[in-house]
Image 1 (cartoon, rainbow, N blue to C red):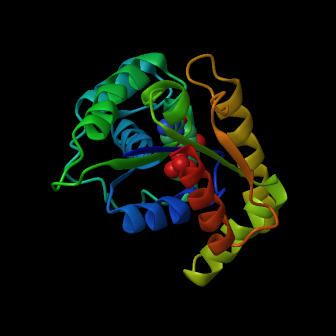
Image 2 (cartoon, rainbow, N blue to C red):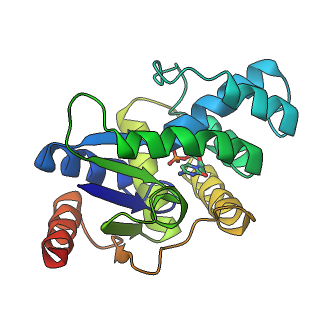
Amino acid sequence: MLIAVDGPAAAGKGTLTRKLAEHFDLARLDTGLIYRAVSLKALELGDPSDEKIAVAAAEGLSFSDPDLAGLRDEAAGNAASKVAAIPAVRDILLIFQRNFAANPPNGKKGAVLDGRDIGTVVCPEAPYKLFIDASAEVRADRRYKELQERGDEAIRSAILRDIIDRDERDRSRTVAPLEPAKDAKVLDTSDLDADAVFAAALNFISLQD
Ligand code: DC
């Protein structure tokens, strides 16, 4: 089983894919974390928007430890969106992602991947494709609450602006832009809670069989 889940920042892809992985006993790959790890590594080496530096960071990445401190920060997400626009970086990371989908680790019989281009580029053959969307306002509210609950300082207007900037960058890049695959089920989750999104995803998957 292979499930591709795409969508913009803070749409709820992580929550959904965790539930899907548990329900179907799948290996889960949050591909945004890989781009985040590359951006942090590139920052250590110099300017992350310099192609040579970003490529060196992608080539030197060890996938065994994706839980680098700071990976979940908003700043890491924004920096990730910048290195993600560099085609040579995407080419390097594509191999790892496809390999994960074809050979899920830990003896799992299938995989669920979430990101921006899973249904369109990484796994265009996936039988189940979902595109999770929500208005920028709703996504900013969700991210704001999440940060507050974690005890992190957050300014809602800054989060909204970052989300809008990141959407624009991810949608307008020339390689693998954020867009639903033609055969993806688009779910607008603006008015849905996590359980309702999960139920809608399960319903879609059952209709494909
Ligand atoms: O899902 P996320 O917010 O952790 O992703 C961080 C950035 O990484 C996102 O803004 C764009 C990039 N990304 C990508 O280009 N392709 C993916 N499959 C996943 C993430």
